[in-house]
Image (cartoon, rainbow, N blue to C red; front, side):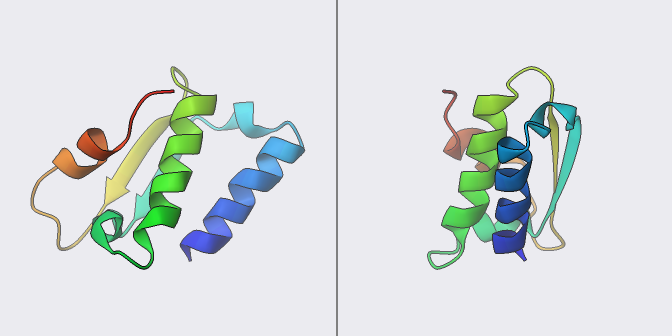
Length: 78
């Protein structure tokens, strides 16, 4: 699922529509800690924060995550 989301982000970049994004909802945000698939999710978040630092709101959802720290502590500003 995250691979398709990354492809959508890449398409929006190529078609110059990335600036139209205002909110992005990422399900299974706990996957950031997954060694096999977490890098794709981190890549998506990093792209959005670098390209749209003051305009995009990222909402992370997880049924199993009990704290809100992993996204803010793992991603770095550009």
